[in-house]
Image (cartoon, rainbow, N blue to C red; front, side, top):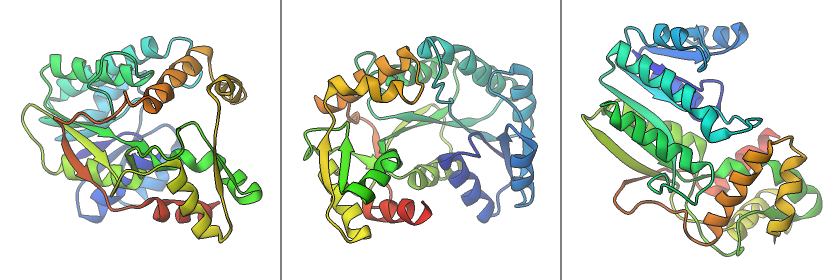
Length: 289
């Protein structure tokens, strides 16, 4: 039995769907009855559980052999790194209580660094906590999500402009689709290890904001020009999304670390490359929207 958290999100849904299609027993963690019904109709078990509810998490893990775990975004957290801690504690205690032989945790590129990468520092600390608890795990250190470009697609379509926090615009960074992350989670779950395994998860090749603009242009058949968003404009953009001051500070550090080259994969990691190109993902997002 594989337990999948985040089943209403992209990577969790992809992992759960792939496992079900391959004939595995799957239990998804969801937060509403409606979400539960969607998954039980597809043949999965569904448990309503919140990461902040320690007893519910322990119940959800009972009888499982492995789990795919991730922490929620905590967009309104006043102290994001601190508010992650009790969630991680509940996860760790649930894994230990159920004696799971192996878990897969969703992490991110640059999680090998202990400082200077914004919110990714929280993932570094999470990895350390799981390791110190003696849990066998695979950490999927995912590249920048290709789907992170979704909020600016409308502007690309209507105005022919692609705003970018990542610059210079020709800076190529590793990016990956959430579907490929889900496939990597399935691969790791069905190939458990003893100890700790750190995997950098990426798409077929590193790409730039200019490459993303070209991919979108190819789908909508009109020119799209990438435009760098000045760092002094970032805070107001994120404040408009009702992000907390702390989250805005962390994300500013995160993008600065990408743009100065600090945030990157650990060369010591295994490298798993997926199959989705930015053209594939851009076409899916545009067709869906």
